[in-house]
Image (tube, rainbow, N blue to C red; front, side, top):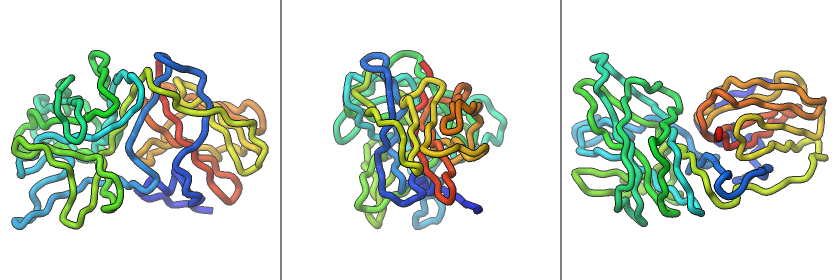
Length: 305
């Protein structure tokens, strides 16, 4: 059976079309030791480089370089607890360094606020020359950041050299879906809505510690169609247990862009394998098990600590 995936996340997050939004896992840490990766993305999101078209034609991108005076690109997060941010991964969709310059850079920013970014609590310069196109790029913070439950995180096009460009992936959503994308245009913050009322989300993941309870325990798998993935969050190794024999090469790991991730998979017994995520960037990953004629997918939050 040949399965073809698209850029729409639901095809690998919920291939059985169950409508599930939350999957149980097992976690063994709490309090200051409980770290996880967060994203605002849902199963129905898809990623793309979103162009801006005006009366004079192409004027740039909603997620980066443009001619409309848009300089900052923020994502609104809400994380309960006295969370401590340690980094962000951004999905870089387009990056051209035509002049081979090492001077182009963005400014990572964190704001507190309610409806709009209000108080800047952290900023960090990041050179774009070291980033990879069409990939999640993790940027670790130089110091721990302690925002409120509601905060805004993103970047400013601080110093992009002439003829260079920098754009992040975004997901265009229906008008009825939550908008989490805000931008600053000509010095004013704007809550994104296009002419048809559609909303938007940036392809960002954040890493936070000292968060509230993240997962619940699940029972031993008995149903042959079920799988259990634990611990979640994980700091390196993840165990996958199923209700049936796990054939070789039937488990794969993907990042949030749907790209196949290199991992070490060790067989513990016929119904259980161990996946080592070490060497990958912190973030949200999808473990996919081809179970006969169907596919079961689980989200896992990988945060080395």
